Amino acid sequence: MDSIGHSIHVLGPGRGVDTQDQGHVATLPGDITPAWQGESSQRNSLLKPDLVRRESARSVGTVSTNLLSFPETVDDRAARLVAAGVIVQSLSFVVFREWWLLVPLAYGFVARTASGPRFSPLALVVTRAIVPRLGGAPRLVAGPPKRFAQAIGTTFSVSALVLAVAGADVVAVVVIVALVGAASLESLAGFCLGCAIFNHLIAWGVVPESVCRDCADITARLASR
Image 1 (spheres, rainbow, N blue to C red):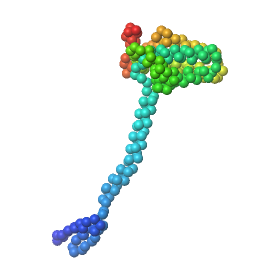
Image 2: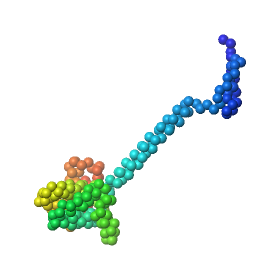
Image 3: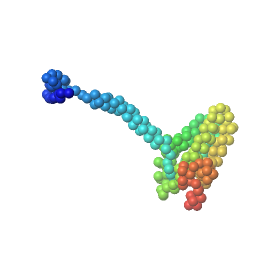
Image 4: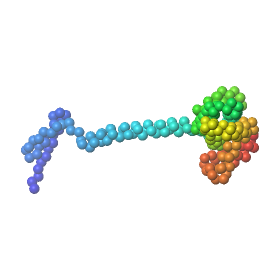
């Protein structure tokens, strides 16, 4: 086969490409975008909205997690003052027997269980207005047992609210009296019944120790009082 000479002369943008092949000249457009480059740009334009959606979802998830987080440690003085507030709210229902008096009580427990003091009016007043005026060093205790105790309070207060709305006032009062007893132990004696139950559940292996490694043995905290 005879060798064939090829030569390509780029004439510059807009002037085309002069291709010489066996004496034939063909002019091609000078501004040609490679097919692979166009496909890549198209893929990038399609991926960017998806990337934005993923980043937005991640940001929303982070905010939600932060909002629904419970403090790792809690000032025991604040916990006892909140318990005192729970006693007042509970006794108001026992005295007046109005079901709507249980609404702020139940809401407070739900809010504190979900996110600590962040959305609880009672806890906010205690942590931001009362405790700072007490002076002295905070008495920090582990947070998970306190959250468990608040969850028990949520169960009692919500149950009492449902019973009161249903007309079972006597049963609702019994439930609230039991709640007053537990809150009194916390407020007056500094004994958190829900925390003690939580620590026993860890000791029995029902709750993994990884949930609260500082909670498996409550004796050290009791001895420091």
